[in-house]
Amino acid sequence: MADLKPLIRDRTYLKHFWHPVCTLKQLEQNSPEGNGPFAATLLDEDIVIARLGDELVALRDQCAHRLAKLSVGLVVGGKLQCPYHGWQYEAEGNCVHIPACPDEKIPARAVTEKYDCAVKYNLVWVRLDRSWDCTEIPYCSAWENPEYKRVIVPDPYSWDSSAERRWENFTDFSHFAFVHPGTLYDPAYKEPEIVDIDREGGELRFKLEPGREMIDNLPPDSPLGSFSYRAAMPYTINLEIHLYQNDKPFLLWTTSSPVSENICRNFMVIAHTDTDAPDDQPVGFQKIVLAEDQPVIESQPGSLYIGEISLPTDKISNQYRRWLRELSEAAVSGEEAFRKSLQTDVIESGESS
Ligand code: FES
Ligand SMILES: [Fe+2]
Image (cartoon, rainbow, N blue to C red; front, side, top):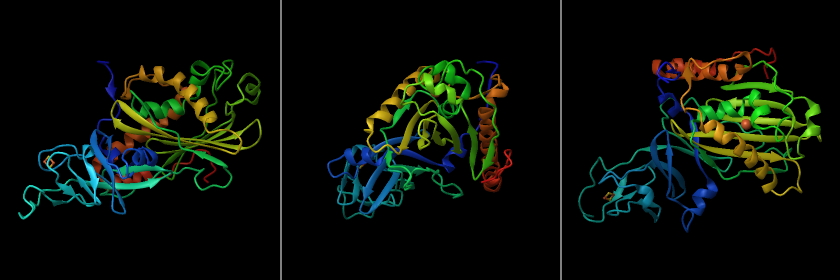
């Protein structure tokens, strides 16, 4: 790739966003009392999640003493205890007990960094940099929405790919005929619609109406309908599908958490109205679709490059790339430019919601 330049030069802007790092279930199943610790990596930063007293915390996964991983330790009496010499940390990340010299003053540097941490949609979210405090946990239209009778949070999955490539894959209309023939699409429909795209409320919003006729050639589990996308920057997509088969709503929500530049951990919410369907039915169908995508997306390089060929039918990815680049460059300029890039709406469809 000697002649291709990376599109995004500086990735620090990603630290200003919330990203999920595990499900609540993973945290709770990881230790007998369900309080962690749980190890995660976000943007190459090793993090430990633990419930200390009443608070769920995300701390830098490194003891200030001899740098052992706190996630290998234990939660003891509401403190996180290092596995090596038993230093204990409280919820703010301060060491409060050193067993080897309990009467000595605790060094001021005996601290591990604390990050923003919150639970939403049964997922544990972390924000590495809270200094500008101008981002929120992305929207999921099925949560606490009585229209949906079943809301499922499946186990996450990892791909050897970037979160950017995963996002583009999920919103790419022209790959359906080639990667998902007979599962998501009738391969006869190779030419996708070119849609209006709005930037609104920190999201890219667009709609797609795939041909109704395709339904005859797809399995009954295939969620074909009118697609309405709300994609909160940088990596979350809320895809509401108004199903052609029964006029009911179906939700596919996905967020890709950037473990590193070339690894993403993906979290999903699937919601629907069929109270009789066992949860493994829609989850199983998504697994088939993901198995079709994964080898193709993992064959791409993780980074996005200037110089990749873009067609009119790549409009969604082109707009996404433009905004990512703007956000990255704005963050280098500072808080005001970053807020402006994130919060300025650009309405193409003429119908601001
Ligand atoms: S390395 Fe953590 S207590 Fe020594
Ligand atoms: Fe796909």
